[in-house]
Amino acid sequence: MAITNPRPTEPTLSVVREDVEGTCPGCGQRRLQAYPVLSEAGWFDVVKCAACLTDVRRVPGPKLGPIELLADRI
Image (tube, rainbow, N blue to C red; front, side):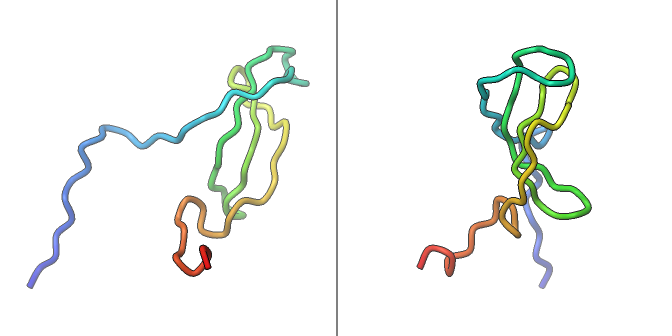
C-alpha cells in the first residue's frame, strides 16, 4: 500500500518575521526583524537587518525548530 502526501498548495515556504525596534550597526537603517533560521549548526533565533542582513542577535533556538513535541508540554 503506497502512502502519498498531498502536494502543498502554497507556492513557497515562508516564516513570520516580527519587527524589532533598533538601528542596524552595519548600515544604520531601522529595519530589524526577528525570526528563526536553520543553519549547519542547527536552529537559531535571530534579529537581522532586513536591508543588509547583518546579524544583530543570534541565539540558539529549539533543537527541532518549529516542531513542538507533546512531551515538551508536560
